[in-house]
Length: 151
Image (cartoon, rainbow, N blue to C red; front, side, top):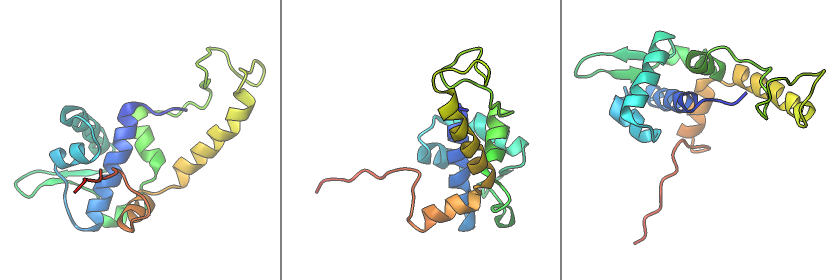
């Protein structure tokens, strides 16, 4: 269960939008793509999927942008974003890319990786956007490491 690049950007974009939404701020496409280090055109396609799936909202006009209502921040989990971008999660995918990998015909890492996949799925189901955006606002984690400038 590995995420596509679009899914990675979708998760980062949603966390950034949530972080800004807690401060009552709407985000522009330009700001989002800059903050998540993603090309604007690619980011726009990802944001369309997130809007279509009701994860984020798009407000048109001069004071528009993307946001998530505060009351929804604790209702959106990582799994929602993964499903919106990558679709159904198939937990029968072999980590080595083998076509036939199962309990009956395991690849060399099957038995070690199956617990990791199970725990990853649980984490996706139990981690809210609010939790992640709060950790950024509290300075516990970050989406983008600021480069130090030399004086």
